[in-house]
Amino acid sequence: MTTNYPTPSQEPVNRQVPREPEGTMRALPGAVAADGQADPCGTSPPGGNAEAGFLSGVGKAIHRHVVELFSRVKPAFAREASKRDAADRIRRAADDRKHDHSGGNRTWLLRLLIPVGGAAEAVTAYVGVEVLVASQSLAIGLSALTAVVGVALACLLATRRLNGLGVPASVRVLEGLFVLILTVLRFQSLAVQGSSYSTAVGAAGLAALISALGLLGIEEIVVETHTFAMFIAALRASWAHWRWARAATALAATAAAAEGAADKLQRHYLEYLLRTEKLPLEEAQRRASALRAALASSETVA
Image (cartoon, rainbow, N blue to C red; front, side, top):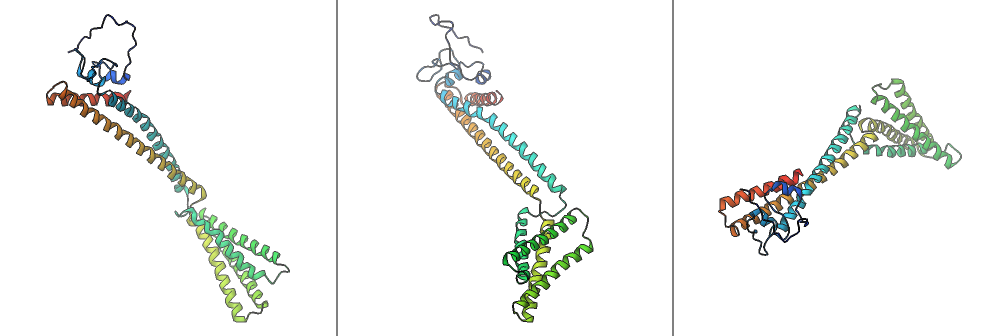
């Protein structure tokens, strides 16, 4: 039943009346959400309904809190959806890079060991050229150049393997000659320095083993690891996923706070109906649930 409210004749017709948010008014067409229309004790005005008396009286503060929380849910949901879409897009791009990669699936960070292998190659090469040149600076330059050539050769072979071209036997022979020549130079250098024959042979053999394993290790690292672009794509995907998880957590917290406030409003309204309006328990529960549902639907759709 719709109740007609009498308008006091002494008030101006154009008096501005503060109103609650429009979504709430649409949800509660019979509620009068104006300030000053409830008694100080919080009871509904004569001829008014219980919703208007509660929302404009004792329930006004908590109602505004509920409205504020529900108004945050929709922007939080939009942010979460945006972050989720961005994370999915970046992850698919990273997966496409992995799919197009013909090498192994190990992390790019293993390629940081390549400079270590190059340094080992330079040190062993320095032993071979130390006494064969006139100055130490020239020996350092030759050993560094030797290490660069060795690492470049290993990377070139790895690139051919990644492209499915295979490694010709002649290139493997060239790599073996590279190691063999360095071994002979190391042996001669040690012999010139006065080392015994067995010592020179053993040291040269050890240096040759280090050089060969270093070159093969560099080649395998290049083949079995991701590229730098794949590494950056994986980092971007992890960062996007973290941002999405953060947005989802914020959405869950906002929604939980809004639902908790709505439950609190429902309990207060139920107590109001039982104590002030003297309604039966079943009727009071039905009206309290209807008010909560109306507020939640109106604020999330508005």
